[in-house]
Amino acid sequence: MIEQNILEITAELSKASNIVIVPHKGPDGDAMGSTLALMHFLKDKGHNAKVIAPNEYPTFLKWLPGNDEVMIYEENKPAANAVIDDAEIIFTLDFNDLSRCGDMQHSLETSKAIFIMIDHHQEPAEYADYTYSDTQMSSTCEMVYHFIDKLRAKNKITPEIASCLYTGIMTDTGSFRFSSTSATTHRVIADLIDKGAKNSDIHQDVFDTNSESRLQLLGVALNNLNVNRQYRTAYITMSQEELDANNFRKGDTEGFVNYGLSLDGIIFAAIFIENKQEGIIKISFRSKGDFSVNTFARNHFHGGGHNNAAGGRSDENMNDTIVKFNSLLPDYKEQLQA
Ligand code: 5GP
Ligand code: MN
Image (cartoon, rainbow, N blue to C red; front, side, top):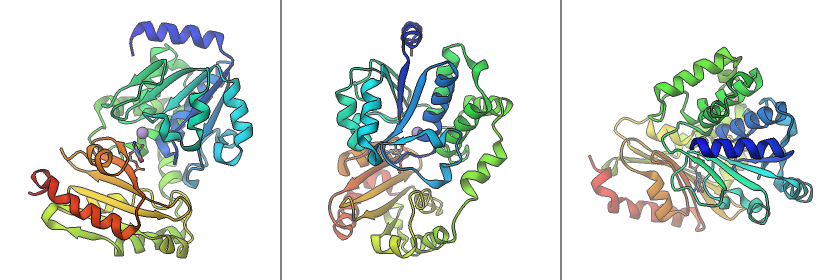
């Protein structure tokens, strides 16, 4: 984002009162951490800032400072639409296309507000007046830190803001282990700890608050693990029945896909999760090295994301989806075979 844009955004912010901040549907730690951090920052500056999430997010994020103020679009559309109507500026965080906002898409498309995108996904769409897109970044939370820095306001980062940003960087980097984690990421993290993020507490709040039924569900997932050594691929299936039998709650399957990738010699992992209510199979893809799951998800499963972490969906049933998935692997044999 160039200096001229920062000057213009500073001028727009100085005029605006009502600001809406939107994460993607199925918000994760980075989406909620970045939107809530920006909300605190803008409220502290005197704006009327509101986070509107397209739908519910996992309970392991419900401790985030500002959680109680989040509006859930799917649960109260008229009230949320009224807030969107009044917005002078709308920040869209951690996604690259308005179609990632589910039912909120139409209200956003018809809004007259100034749009500012902050995001690290590939191939950003061109809906925003100001686009701060950087696919090299570990997380949108790291970008919000840099954005605040560009506004020359690093000294305004409170312990609440630091905790929110720490959370998203931590979750999107797999606790600082993915290749997107740079030396700068670690410098940002160090500064956030200096500014009041309680790092050890945050790890516990996110990772050590499992219910017994979530661990039972993990057992089912690991039992369903299917390994294809020929194409260095592993995948997990989860039927709606299996989810129901284990008291499934939003976020319970978060991270399961990584178990496939933790197998020695496996470079491509997927998890297929049935959602009977939406009539889809929601899919997460992960890879190691050069095999782009962004391209794979985009080409075959209506999705996208990053090179090594992407998502998508299938409108066919589980069986047909798996048959399709397996039939695609030979097309990528150059990249997948050792
Ligand atoms: P996850 O598998 O954890 O849900 O998502 C992995 C990455 O892919 C995230 O950056 C997420 O935003 C992105 N992603 C997940 N599902 C979709 C999808 O359906 N479409 C697109 N474009 N990106 C997705
Ligand atoms: Mn992210």
